[in-house]
Image (cartoon, rainbow, N blue to C red):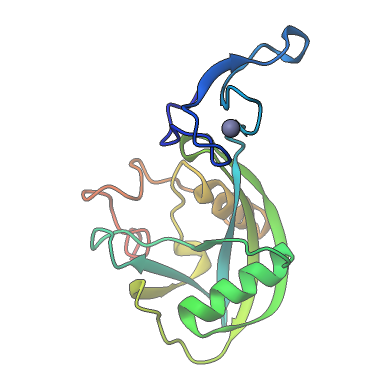
Length: 188
Ligand SMILES: [Zn+2]
């Protein structure tokens, strides 16, 4: 069970208790309102990810909060009322100013560590790159020079590379480590 940040019922402000699902439903422990108003189901959140291709090269971006060597895919959460395809096109526009001109599903990937599930797309994009304040830098990398990381979106990169007949060579270390090699520069 998640220890989470929730302590009080959002409806009546009673301190939450721990209760068990029915044994027939697995008996999982949940945080819940003692009066039954609310249950913290703690279901995984979908995250959209884009392997963005611009004129034959793949865009990797570095979040302003990340180490200087860490470059990754464009990601974001969905907004209510939009399809995943609309969501990833919106995130791409917001973060890079690029327009999605073709969007194809790569696959769906677990990210249990963050209680998320990743929906990954290959997005062909066009336009002039202008980064949002969230992003500090970007690289345009030839597809064969991509070095996937063994987590989350890295598996999507690897699957996309295999589908293109490219050899996949994983990074040894997680991408978001200060000592991680730069996937864009790993094979110059
Ligand atoms: Zn309550």
